[in-house]
Image (cartoon, rainbow over all chains, first blue to last red):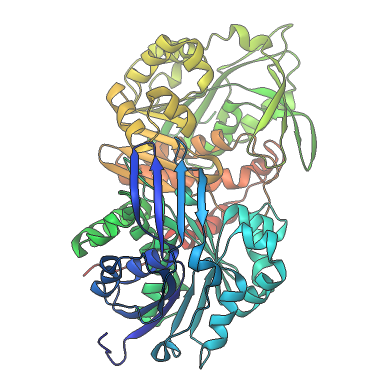
Length: 314
Length: 314
């Protein structure tokens, strides 16, 4: 991978997987998926040097690895385990696409995932920890040779239910947590998201991003709140990866600008929401692989039209 | 009521009622409620001449009528029925405040509501028809001596289920419909709100406002979409009247400016959302009665901070 001096470095840690998806609109085959994949592809839309740290099996095709390198994503941290099988998830979405049943989860090589941060990403500006066992997330933070400018971590209710203490260790050491609304409530025993975000900030992260799926995302920081809607779409085809694509756009923008002010994070939230709106239009990563700059810009304009108004206060 | 020449006239038709509310935070007594009440109080924050057309019983206290006149709302269209009883609704909210059970509905005088538009409001610029039997809504439209600049109507699933044909007559004759997300889906058999709004525009109204409660509101017009979030609050105390307060702010702004462009409607949506954020902070109309100009302006600033961003497209 070409090193460009001065360009922001983004380290991404997350699953690289096979997904097998059924929606009301059809069935995919066993296709490329995983949080690390979606985060990486979204972040590749920004001027950043990024690396995805993950693990796959010998069954993972070279053509999928090529997708990463074709998008300028360093794959020296993707461990290909001889004789191993790649993490496999099969799920079926309900008619409203807001809920899904997991039909099969085969952790395979992911069960023993022991991430090793590539040497030239130990000084990454931004670290994006995908939804993983908190001990793995901690292990990555410990490998950094200097404190990154920004550490972002995603998590989910499974880790709250099963690894609370380790999760709290992670939460204390990060700058931004991304979490969905129900999980924020569960973590804090507060129904109000304003109160929940305040409690999470007390534990550690100065920024709390609450994902509400089709209802958008909220960013909390001290007394500031910013909200971005999801772009209303005629059709949502497959929601898989939307949250990770959002996180990848968020992290990618911040790594590109190296500006972690609240104003910059607002823009990062919009960029993440914008990219997520594409992700859901096709199965898996399909839409993200064929995304053109002008499509992204055109939709950013739609986001402006959707949200910007002009009320003068007297 | 003082007539000020040139000031926009707003005709409001809706229930004026007794509400008896239980939330997780407490119980109200039998207090002032009703769509017409909440719409009128919200609209009174704007420089408009407004009139509420409704019906109450002899049990309706003068002090409640005085609330209307104190807010410069014409009450010559509120029929006080001798020996009659006022519409009474008793409801209990669930813990998340997003759903509620109706415990008692006594229509009383509302069962025979036959609205009579006051002569000096038959030329109103804006007509806001609260959620009522579609035949009543039609009867009001027929009483107007000239086509108002803008007719807005609210409705609900009850009328879809029981008076579909009459409702469609209303929908054909109005400019703006306000409806919640589930009802928009029910009306059109479309899950996507973008598609639902397009279908509703085909029936008649050029503007479709879809209310999503705590998830905000969408305005659709041709290919344009605007979205306003609900302001994230530390505490929601009582959601009763929030939707009507939203509608009242929306209608009030449009009647004040007499500008029904899409840009003006965007601002109307923000004004409506802003006022609704106050309504939910206390039982019933309590918060709306004590609302100060500087509080409204300060919260409009919060709405700007919540939603406005600055991404330059190259």
